[in-house]
Image (tube, rainbow, N blue to C red; front, side, top):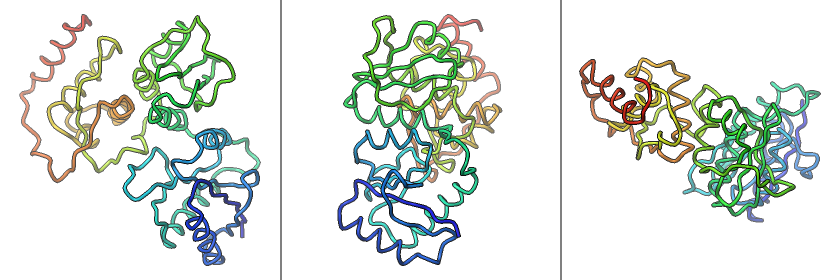
Length: 306
């Protein structure tokens, strides 16, 4: 049987003691043997969502799984592994089995690799901290640097253009060891979130529920962001009525990857809201040329080629 180490941080002392007691109760009942240990020797970190962000940032860079613990009424964070307090034995059992299965798929001798969602998840945390974490830095595969500081994004002009073109995929953001250079250009943080999501994974983001419906609460600023006809059409459709991802794929006839990246970007930029499926109206019957006329008018308004 595989032995895995787990460390908890940020829990109330009673919750931590209860967790350790449950680990003992579960011995011999799981595919792996779980042992509480120091963070340096742990395979998994179980951390409260409001614990020291510096600890979370350093742990994220290791590529090891993070189990986020949230209070009962907190929104679900951007993490594949989440536990809600009070933690129950069966809830913990299911989570530990999922984490051990995940670890079994990663060779133990391989260098830790960041999740495809790590950069977006770290950026979501920064956006939720309202610029209180100090300067943060992410790198791209070709060596370009992206900064976040005081609620604003920064990049060298050449990197910003490649970001707009969808050519940059970033590492997770972490504390910067130097100030943002004066040559870096400032731009809105929501624009960085939009661009990184559009160039991110083709799947629906882990913090979005495929069974939920989504609508635009306001339009993205395409005059600033730039856009394609795909983004205009999907925006027009979700501004009209909420749709589940599957409904939007069907109604728009767009590839799922295009729809998923649009919803991911709208969510990251804060212009997307969810609506219960039970409140959805029957999909409206739209004349065949209406979407084309709407998109054409918008493209002409934005001075794009129709």
